[in-house]
Length: 280
Image: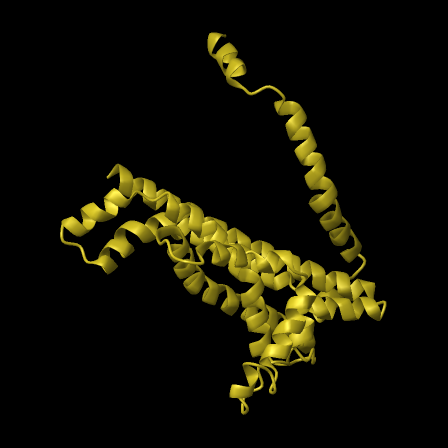
């Protein structure tokens, strides 16, 4: 009885109201729209759903979207980590400006980013003119560049606070005991920032999968070559083929959900290993 009273007293007031408002907000923005999509997709028979999912155009669009998103997130995981380390550990002229520029992809419309990148990487553009034999804009390379641009802040903003909170004395102790800088980074620093890095990777990857505005300008939007899944869904909607669009949307939702579950599992596994190592 006393333990129950203690537990009730320790509970913050307003929990029921806060939880109700949170669930209502989540339902209106996420659960109800997704539920409506799943409900509408039931109009498609299972045989028709398999036919849509296994069509060559759908498979090609998924390969482009997932491949470019994964490659862009991987590039950001490397260079975003380096950038986050520089911003967190060093003081230099222009640091505040660089720190503010990181959030630029959040602030500008993605269509503006797509137009700017297309102009820069076109064959007569500022950068594209140095690669006359390679078509950067209107290709899968251009799609990857656009997704890298819009995904960079997710890596930096999730890893930078973790690096800033790292105890420098532990790093100094490791070096004092004879560990090389690479060994110290691999055994001391990286295990601490790995969960945040994986979270940033997941956010950048998921953002890339759903990106539309910047990609349609820098890619040629050719079916089987540079057509991404969001564009394929949009084309089906323009043709008033709502059932096929909903089927592709559900398939995209399932694939994304499975990938996020895998990433969450890896995060939990990393945290468990970190606890075991700390206890040992």
